[in-house]
Image (cartoon, rainbow, N blue to C red):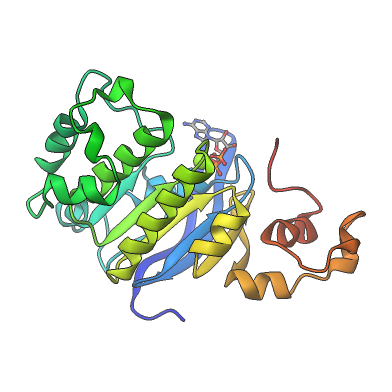
Amino acid sequence: MVTSPALRVNGLRKAYGDVVAVAGLDFEVGSGECFGLLGPNGAGKTTTLEICEGLLAADSGTVEVLGRTWDSAPDELRELLGIQLQETQLSEKLTVDETLTLFQSFYRNARSLSEVIDVVELGEKRSARVGALSGGQKQRLAVACALVGNPQILFLDEPTTGLDPQSRRQMWDLVSQFQADGKTIVLTTHYMEEAERLCDRVAIVDHGRVIAEGTPNALIDAVDLTHLPPPEPRKTHATLEDVFVSLTGRTLRDE
Ligand SMILES: Nc1ncnc2c1ncn2[C@@H]1O[C@H](COP(=O)(O)OP(=O)(O)OP(=O)(O)O)[C@@H](O)[C@H]1O
Ligand SMILES: [Mg+2]
């Protein structure tokens, strides 16, 4: 159920030269929801997020975040948003504490370092340089940088890509914790298990358009397994992957 949307996207379009990345995209995210954008490589997910995050200008369409627009309230929105980019490049020479102190200094209403470090479970790594962290630890530090400003809405672009199962679970826990505080999350993922587990609703994006939207269960229930190519009809339970295959005849992941 969508009440007082935290994010409202209407008729969004963005082309890079001849490449149409976002081709008229609409969706709404309710306050307190965890919303997932799913779709294959190049579907337009990152472009959409970056427009919502105020990092990229749309060619046309409107974006309203927490009832504000980037044109009318950019400074206010920067205080309210937490952003984790698909590829975060933090300075390898800084320690975990120094990195977070830097990000903390950007915000008026920032959280304490120790609180955020606890949430991302990096307590033992506070003095370690970023260059010495594992991939999963770097990813959690990137999320810590997104959380330190005490945001009302968190944007996560493929937060668990490349993580081992344990790091992935840690990331899921911290997303759930953030949502338990009544806050809103918009994420992208290629992992269907992740979407089914974390997201209240998902939008499946293909070629810059939303081709299906709903709760993971409703989308899965609507799949007719008998129409999937073999050997899928032998399965008794559909997945979000099957939803995509049944809509497009293609698989969601390249690899
Ligand atoms: N800076 C850019 N210049 C030119 N084309 C771009 C640029 N950024 C993205 N594109 C193109 O726009 C389309 C959408 O890219 P986008 O990164 O939004 O997809 P995505 O859904 O996030 O994909 P992925 O799952 O691989 O992260 C792709 O065809 C991509 O090649
Ligand atoms: Mg992307």
